[in-house]
Structure formats: structure tokens, C-alpha cells
Image (cartoon, rainbow, N blue to C red; front, side, top):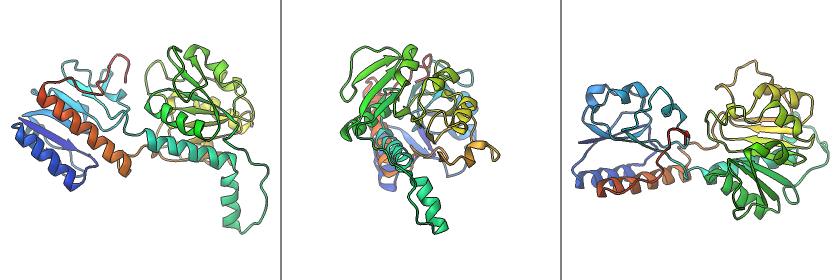
Length: 319
């Protein structure tokens, strides 16, 4: 029996730990060389895959029983491309909350403190006040998506003095660090007259364009939007219009409806927009990499012991 690894952010020491753990259970490990896609024949004895493998390759493996992906978002494995219910799918949920929460705070603070304008001034050697700054302290922030990332962001925003609203599928109960919880059906109410909207949604059929033109219209000219979930959870054309017309104050965007963002997309040139190339929860971030390793090592121990795995994905929900 074999365990194969591809595109995983593990150190030599971590690889050694997993090699020994596998050997003790009678498994062979195969580490795919960087940048390569192994032939199906190399993996025909694989029972477990860890990392990023092409779905077509996964379909061809007759002994495959479990796939662990480092990523939290696994929608590409939940549709028609690869939906084999006999293979357990687990994800990296819980590994990225700290890093992405820090990214979202960074984006908000940069916009609130006019930092993009000051960075432009620095390059031009211009000494000029760029207007009144805003603060997270005393602000009202709506967090759309109350999973690991949303809850970690809420804790940090609350510690800085914000009032935090949460949005999820069902509004049962108010968790720690949230002041109110709304259902997705109440999204327009939840984003009305807030200082910021923070998006942490997974990519599913239900979340596609959940933030519609009507929801964006419900926001205020003071509202800042941060998206680190999936780009297609927002109507990007409606968002672009709202930013251009200053119907919302600005945005920090790490994800887009199509990636990479087209060279001629108007978002690139907007002074009230911060753009990053889907890096807020990068696997190679040391904190994320350690968390991914911990999740997989614990799951591997459970697999060998015949116990239920953590982070099992519900393919019907998409997360």
C-alpha cells in the first residue's frame, strides 16, 4: 500500500516524521518531484493521496480510498469532475484562519488609514496629508461566513474595539466575539450602514454571487469590502461599478471571479482598491504549513487506527 504526496509545504524533518509513521503501519511513501505530474502507473497502489493531484489522475487509481488536500476550498472535487463518494475527501480547514484574518485586518487598516495614497506619495516624494483617517475601534463590521477564518477575524476585530455582525446559513445562537448573527436571507440588512464587510465564504452553488448588485446597493458610501473567500461569491461587475461611482468607499481583494485578473480589468487602476494575487492563505506561509502538517499527521494516525477522520468534506455542500 502506498501514500503519495504532491505539492505539499512540508520540511525535510516533517517528511521524515510522516515516512516513519507510514512505515510503522506498513505503508510506502512516494513524494512526487516538484513540478511533475506522476504517471498513473506510479500511483496504482495508492490508498492515500496528500496534496494537489489532477482529478483525471485520481479517477484512474483503483485502490484510492482517501484524499487529503492542503486547501480549505475543495469545490473542484465536489462537482462532476471528481465526485466519487467511495473516496473520503478531507480538507485543510482550520489551517488558514490566523494568516487570512491578519491579511483582512491589514487590508482594512491600509484603506482606513489611506495607506495606498501615502505609498503613492512616497514614490513621488510628496509630503501631503491625504485626509481623515478611520479606525477599526468603534466601527461596525459584518463578517460573511462564520467558519474558521470568519471566527478568527471576528476575535481580532473585537479585540480592536469593533462591533461585529456575522452572517451564516442559519442564525442560531450568537458565538463569542460576535454581537449579532444574521442568516444569508438577511444579508442586505446585515451589510446596511456598516463600516466594513469581510467575505470569508466557500465556493458553492449557493454562495455564487451571493453578494449581488442588490446587496452591494444596500451598503453605504463609507463601507469597505474585503474578500478572501472566493471571487465569484460577489457580482464583480456590480462591485466594479459601485467602486467606480464611489457608492462604497473601497475594497481589498485577494480573489476574483476569474483568476488571474485580466490585464485590462478596471479594478487594477482604481485608487480605492487593493489587489493581491490570491495569497492571503498561501500554503508556504510557515504558520499555515505547520497547521497543514498537524492536520494531516493527526488524520493519518486516525486512519491507521480505524477512527473517523477530521475535516471530512460534505460533497453536497461543497465544504
